[in-house]
Amino acid sequence: MNFTDQISEFTVGVPFEQIPMEVVRVAKEFVLDSVGVQLIGSREPVSKIVREYIKEDGGIPEAGVIGGGFRTSVTNAAFLNGTSNHAPELEACGNFAGSNPLSVIPVALVLGEKLKVSGKRVLEAIIIGFEIQGKMGIATTPGSHDKGWCAIAVQGTMGAAVTAAKILNLSVDQTKMSLGIAASQAGGLMRQFGSMTHLLEGGFACRNGVTAAILAQKGLTADKRILDGPSNMWEVMINEQGYNPEKMIRGLGDPFYFKSPGTSMKKYPCCFFTHRAIEALLQLVCEHGLSYEDVERVKAGVTPFIKEALVGGADPRSGDMARFSLEHCLASVLLDKDVTVDSFTDEKVLSHPLREARRKIDLEIHPEWPSGRSALVIPITIKLKNGKELTHKVDKLKGTMDLPLNRKEQEGRYRSFAQPYLSDSQMEESMECILSLEGVNDITNLMTAVTFGRKGSSA
Image 1 (tube, rainbow, N blue to C red):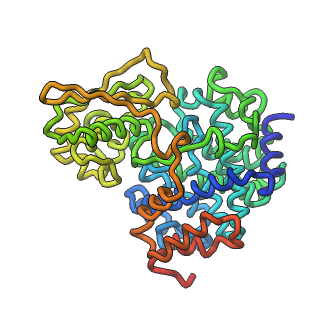
Image 2 (cartoon, rainbow, N blue to C red):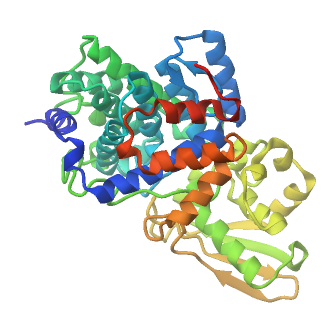
Image 3 (cartoon, rainbow, N blue to C red):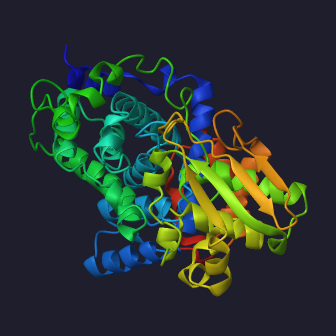
């Protein structure tokens, strides 16, 4: 049996009842986080541009735009909600390509609303879609990155197609077609890091996955062995040393990806590669009561992999670029003792105090260190004006698989994201609904609440 067959049969053949409840629990926590991030992401400039485009384009009002206050076609809703989920750079992510569930959760929610399905069906689709996407990511790490592909838009498109196929109840043959159609739409470039288009790639993945599954349902054909044989998808996109196709099917559902290797909730709204450095500097500043004026220089030790990925550089010219600037993130810690969404407005990035603070940051490159997505520890050294030096590094981040948020912390995080859009009762009811999603008969009320918020809707 070939890889495309095995993935399609797994997608169709695994019901909710075969998924461990621990996996269901973790999946619900990431749905809660995704909805919160979509709410806060809906105010980001890239989301506003896409929203304007979609309103001009029109569309049958069949699925809600979270935080947007209107319904549109299911493909448009997937596009915009996927974009909003990526827009503030707070999306969940992990150590392998394809470890971002932002490409499966928006898809399941908008299709679930259109079809008026149960929360159990939504969770089933999310867990299976992320399982396939995640295992594809493991199979294509490090090759995907080495070739410059953005996994959110490549592996993410495939995960979105599987999610949509599952929730649409496609057959095995239709699921194969869905994968084939999705493969011809999968594409995104790391070269786009630091631009709005990088954020847009989350929306592309969601939209294209939905499109692939709907077209397959209607009878559109594609190569039914797109993951197999000469010129298969990964052979074309990645050189043969960069992927191992056996890993796509090894241990499918045993364990599920949500359980192991798992994924992480991002604490700071910027590239995940900066987070350990931010936390290390913040801990030093707070522990020693340092002011901006106390600090002469800050040195961050990085691998060539991290230096290459953080394209924002020492003098970013926009908020989008600054999210990929380690210098900007560390300068924000020195000045504000925090890194928040407001740290990345264009006005803030271009302000004189931050431009001056970024000049205090030095990156020291270490090609001899272990590299890659699993080697993200960045040692920080502060040189004080009194001549003293302080050094610290952070191995485990709160919110990662090694140190997950507890339920109280997850709920607080959701409230902080949702508060500008939802009333107190809507926040509590939507949170309760998501955290008990397997018992919800129809997700329409949930989607109505997070779409229209305080304004309400008679739709």
